[in-house]
Length: 62
Image (spheres, rainbow, N blue to C red):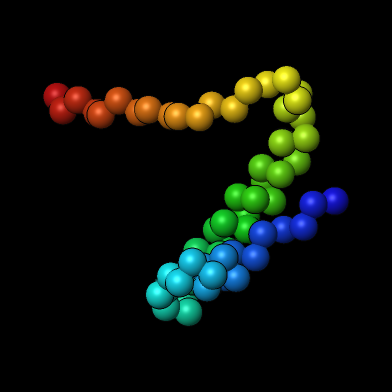
């Protein structure tokens, strides 16, 4: 089993000055995303190449 990411430790290591309450909120969301997506990673075949860039076209105002 892969260890979950310590988002607070990463923020501290990068020197990010994020207020504690905001950091708690951000970490909860990131942990939720990691929990949801980690099992999906195991289903990707090793020969599948990652998408290095995702370009989203700007929305057109009507």
